[in-house]
Image (cartoon, rainbow, N blue to C red; front, side, top):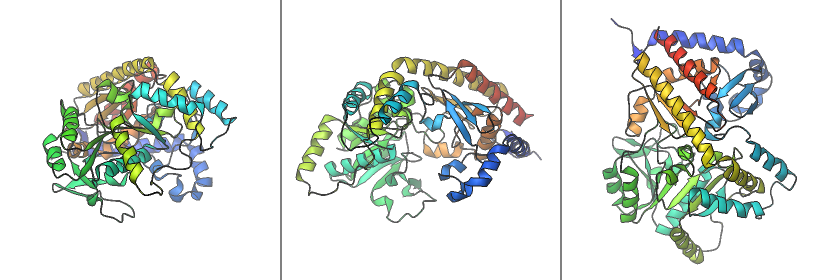
Length: 455
């Protein structure tokens, strides 16, 4: 009788390695443990945000500082940081132009509900970088997606948003649906969910144009909301012709196409939309767009803006349901200008893509050498190793490819070897300031962990 295996790894060996790595982590982090024991109890569940417990660690890492592509904890241990705030610091921690902009703006006011010269410049740079949209600003991409959805519903008079099974668009209510027995259903585990999400959303599989066409043909879908690549899961790439097909179907059925590039900015200068020549009606980007300062932007094509202007001219006066007091503050605009003009440059993406290619090739070579049924996916500067064969086609396949126990062991073991990757999935980002030696150390650590798991 053979032992059970998970993703090609013997279950007993996996458990033994995980236990050893947990003990190694505890022994290496006495200061973090002590600090948490003293002060963490003031926070609900002992962390400021619940997802800080999603790291597969005995207790959270406590950070002292971060710079470039390196993070240092309270023990004084330095890590090669490939998580980079799960994209929020994709261009490196505290890029010098952004830090300078923060210092300068901090002496000129932090918020005042009026535009500044930097705000006007930021609009020009957004169009120059991402394309001809009429822009608005938000604090998070979640907010930006919500606002885009409101506009789409307002100008089409339709109630529903089409999303893809397994999608991620922040905490937008309409996206928390899944396919169950071929029908739209609430995702399990939602907290305090009151209204029926099926009244405002329909979900189909990614890469299935036939299903999209069938859903849009009912005439009640205001917009398709999608990432050009499925992320925040086991990454799923669009098949040839899929995104062009979405554009065509949206036009044919008088629905809008909203592209959320919050994660796929990694694709290159101007994001996946610019690199691959997409033509969405609306565009959303967040996380790292202002170098790490909480900022998101959303825009609409001129034709959509004109329809929205017409709607606003006839609607009753009152609050639109969009906008927050601290969104549009001058610090956001100062950091947007610094990032778009000096940090997120075409030259930066050349370096990022070269480094990510080096990482992806190195990881793939290790997987091939160890003959495990895994694969590697890269979208520009974003790289993922997936503990299952590929390529993956849709959200259902991505969910099946997810191997939490193996991923947890890999994540913890890599951290114990000085390499920090994202906790929610096996995602790694290469920044413009990531060094080749950091990439090579990650590849070597990945090789060492796999060797340990397989012997």
